[in-house]
Image 1 (cartoon, rainbow, N blue to C red):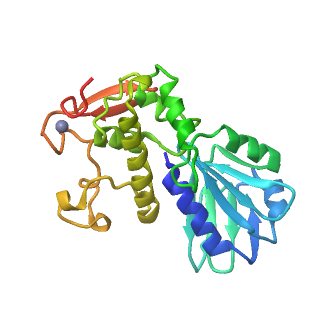
Image 2 (image 1 turned 30 degrees about the vertical axis):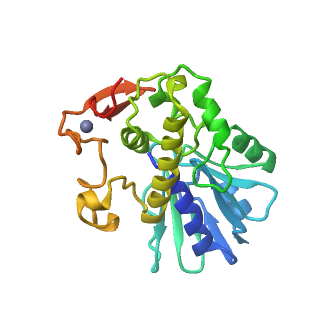
Image 3 (image 1 turned 180 degrees about the vertical axis):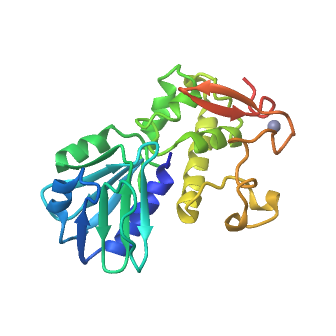
Length: 263
Ligand SMILES: [Zn+2]
């Protein structure tokens, strides 16, 4: 599932590639024909991301609202733009680049009020300016749910998915099964600061890299898939060699080190 760093990166790239010029919008698959017709020929005023939600303003009364969900993709096509392949819900074609949306959970036009109400429900987004960190802190303090479940709750922190969850809890030495309200202020601060730092890196690189370049012996951009993560889908702890444990927390599997993340 694309996590928040990808959605923020997409918003940035959409602005860079489609901004200011008329966009040709179509629904090759046909399931979003009316919506595409409403924005066709309009310039993209701005794309913006909140957590895992993407909003595109084309200067009409409604806002294009996209949520990629588990399997959705928004793929950039460069010149020469190929014909759409597969089930493309929406194609946005600018002057040189096109973007193909497939498999989204949501792709619809919503009112600015509906957008505001989605944003109002979301927790602190580490990739936005002035995120509501105190709300996120309260979100942990007020809950006995396992930290590993709470950290995926988009109404607490917006944008974290399964990969960042496992990596962040490892880096802060927090067992995913601990009650959220058992976190100390220092532990929450550790979680939050690592979230901001690592999601910024992820946005810049377009993929999740959490390992320390000094430890791996190469820059993040050159790390292979077997080098860029500490615990997600790994067998042994990179730091102590202990066999990692996998548990189901918040409905999804998480891997952790029983030595570095004691209960
Ligand atoms: Zn360990």
